[in-house]
Length: 382
Ligand code: CMC
Image (cartoon, rainbow, N blue to C red):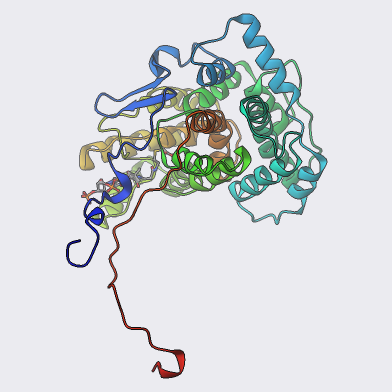
């Protein structure tokens, strides 16, 4: 004891910065060198070369699938995309101003109730749940969008992969070749990212031996915040608010002078460029040009240049993913849900890894109030 407080109170790391809180094989962020690895593979070596389903297989099995394994997983996922009718009814009940991430979190919790393996744990049941969640989350997002637009719902095409099916169910037409490439790239790049806040939240919940759907709903709640996945929506709002390239300078100066955060910039771990931003920047420019939104890319690029020069910080994954998604016709309030659709594969990988070698995650806190305050009964309080 020191100053009446237990000795364990002395070590406190604000925001757990730099604290090693889990062992994992799934992914690693090397913030010094700006590298991201999925099971040892450098993201630059696999992005634009592998499909989302190959990455899902890698995250769950520690190796890439052969063609038969890939086809089997692709078929299994496509066959699990349909939602229980009760969950579709829930989506219809949601008020139109509910944020898609609120709806997604609620719908995922409800999927847990109707899951055929509800109440069953163990590696086989959890793998089946993982497949269903990866398949059903994109359907929730697409169905919600169409319900809000008053459009009929579209069933997944068993011939298509997850990314193509998502765009097909969202917009009612199969994606063009470039959209196929870009949507799958978005899914691959967002799939996993070390012990980020939402993954940690999911692992904490899993460590209590609560079920996979509960852990996933918690992770979705963490991703929703603007300091995490919610930043992509805020980036789009900022770019549209700036409106013109020649307004960027004043806007950024105003933000930095007022010590306000520029959304889509900075990172807890990266001290250099987020490697995912490099791929997304390229497709942001290409798609904005193709779709007549060149100025949105030019605004983004100027924001990047000025923030780098004036603040020395770099864009993160959320910065260019905003204009990429916008150019594909995805509404801004759905951007974070698209991030969640991809990250679901990573979250369930971590949840299964946690179950496989579990110890309750239960840190301690530094107590800052007084100790031993004398109690006053209510009728004696002023
Ligand atoms: N704009 C302006 N200044 C910034 C920004 C930013 N986006 N990010 C960090 N800084 C400054 C911050 O003001 C502080 O400066 P000073 O030391 O002069 O006070 C310094 O950099 C350290 O910032 P911090 O907020 O203490 O760093 P952190 O590690 O706690 O925060 C972060 C990391 C991602 C929350 C933060 O960079 C941020 O708020 N960025 C904007 C939101 C965002 O883009 N989030 C997406 C994160 S990556 C994808 C994901 O996980 O979803």
